[in-house]
Each structure stands twice: as structure tokens, then as C-alpha cells.
Image 1 (tube, rainbow, N blue to C red):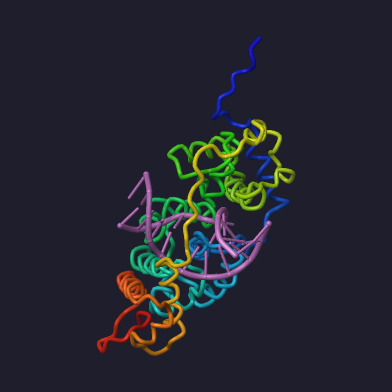
Image 2: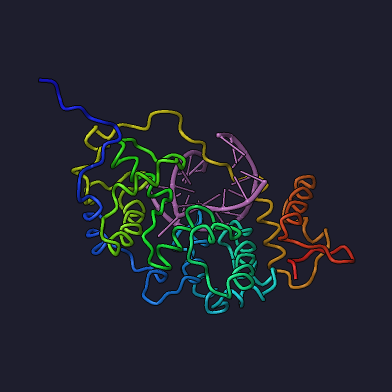
Length: 300
DNA sequence: AATGCGTGGTC
DNA sequence: TGACCAAGCAT
């Protein structure tokens, strides 16, 4: 008798989604944007801030931001300079401008109400596949597959027996749908629960399999926790890159409350060629503007 | 589809 | 200590 056929894409068995939902009930972090009566606008703001940025850094900025701009129209009325300063050091400050642009679109086209449909959300600046579904699910309680880097990693291990998640695939939504509980209310909780499992237990570095509620049905563990096959993805450099220089330049301009001349930007970076290139790119991105007399400032 | 885009914590 | 990592998006 031969061994049972094993499909590499086989589901880990019935009830797996429910087990993850039940684990979430006991293990979830108490994050402010998950509390009752947090509206879709607040959820949208949290999701944009959380793009590539750790929870701990987002929390205080999110609170301040919503206290100041509790509605899309209130943010739309702010200047880019105000928005860039309020963004603080969350990183990728183009997100702040796009969030303001999204607020403008919501105020003008949607009556100051965050749209609830995924296509309408995806049409907003800075809102992509992940964020649109996250807002529909977490902000409006819709049954929606929500796939981020955590979810891709959990599915890669639990379902496919691979060590790493890799890039988004067309099959991601179907993989998640196969795990999602039938009950709509539990399905909504499942979307956040599997993200939380990836964030707390099935982490990228050394997964805490001892704490995992589905370790006994995990395809990756059952295969002996094989190492990642294939080339390691490159970690992007930061020191010396234009990203670092742009950050330094913005640091100077956030601190300055009057327009500054080019000489005031020199301490930000020694290499004049790179400094100039980065200043140009900030101007192009709308993160910096030049006054009539040739001075630089955050856009008023 | 590969690349650029910030920042700071962790081990 | 420096590599790695953190709820993506746009181009």
C-alpha cells in the first residue's frame, strides 16, 4: 500500500479558521483602532499609517491625528505642511499626502463618508488591494478576504508547507476563502485573527510554533519545517540612499517654520549632487515647495 | 515585475 | 554591528 497522496496545496482541514478565531479571542492585542465605535475613517487612517510601519510607532500619531482631523473634510482643509508635520517620523511621508488627497476625494465625491465598496476604496489615492479590503472588513464589518504580508506567510506555511510568504499571488484570495468560517460574523473576525497570528506567532524570523493554535495541522511543520527554497530576498539598503537623504532634508524643513535657503539644507547631507537630486525629487513629489524668492519650505 | 520610498527597533 | 524586519502602494 502506497502512502496517501499528498497535494502540496491541500487545505489543513475543516475548522481551521474557527480554531484561529477562537485563539484570537484570547490572544489579541488591545489596539485602539479595534475598539467598538471606531468609525471607518479612523480605520482607514490606521491602515494607511500601518503600511510598512510598526504598530507601536503608529499608536500615538493615530490618536493625535484623529483628535485633530476627525473627518475626511477636516483633513482635506489642512495644508500639506500641517499634514507632513503631523505625520512625524512614521516614514514614507508621501503616504501623508495621499491620505490627504484621499480625504479630499471622500469629501468631494462621497459626501464626507468613507465609501464601503472595495472598488470605490481602491480608486482612492494610496489605497490598494490590501487597504481597501481592510477598510471594508474592519471598518464596515464586511466579509472580505484581507491579505497582507502576515497572511501570506501564514498561508504559505499552514497550507502550502513553504517557509516564506513571498509576493502577492492571484491565488491568495482563494487560499484565504478556503480557510474562512461560514458564519459571517466569524469570517470578519477571522480576517483580523489570521493577521494577528502572523504578527504575534507565525512571525518572519523564528516562528513561535509552541504558541500556535494550528501547529498540529500546519503543512510546513508536518513537512519538517524545511528552510526556504530559493534565493533570499534582498534587504533594501538605507544608509547612503536617496531615501536617507530625503529624510534628512525633510527633517530640516519640518523643524523650520520659515522658508530656508539652499545653504540651510547643506548640513543635511555632504554630497551636493545627491542633495540636489533629492531636493528635486521632494519638489516633484509635492513634499517640498519653492517660494517666489527661491526659498524652500513644506507646501503651504 | 522590479524598484523606490523612511524610520527605528531587535537580536 | 549590521542584517533583518514592520498591517503596501505606485510606477
